Figure (cartoon, rainbow, N blue to C red):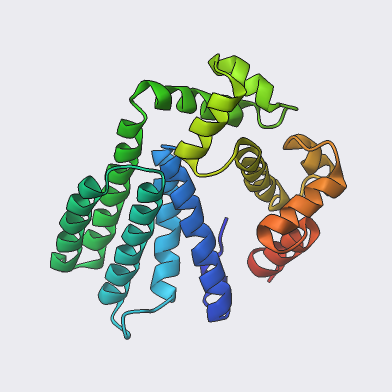
Length: 242
């Protein structure tokens, strides 16, 4: 859990890193059609937006600018996975007008929530065709079994299509290959466990599906820029120890 009171004493650089990380979670959640997780993360990031002033001292302008920027990030992500850009332009203009017409921080934040909901629905609607149903089924299987030693063959067998066809579809609709997607899920899950300080790094690596701690640590550092041990230390120094 993020300690927002302590965050006020962090450097701008640290707060921007937190903002970037939370925006990444929102984008990944929308891409996977996980509305609840996207909204949960959005509620966290609003507090970060207030601290990271880009409104020349005006909190309302600051929140508006951040949410407009978030909308641009979401639009780019959705376009990159091949969804109709004209539909997105219409939605984007609608929300930009609503944001600019808003006269309170509370209303602006609510518009941001509605924006995320609609963009998530765009993703889910795009998943309504046969190809996307297969990918959604595959993604659900991966999320439910990431802690196991699942392989590409397992997922292909689950959705009953060839590896070649699956890899092509999966990259098309998620933007990454199967192994990258699986490892990203495992790394994100490991972060949650590292924050609890109840398990050793070896136990965490096993719990999220890695059978080799060294390999887990390497992937974690490739993904985050720091080792699991450093991540845990940094987290507890910032948000737990006072």
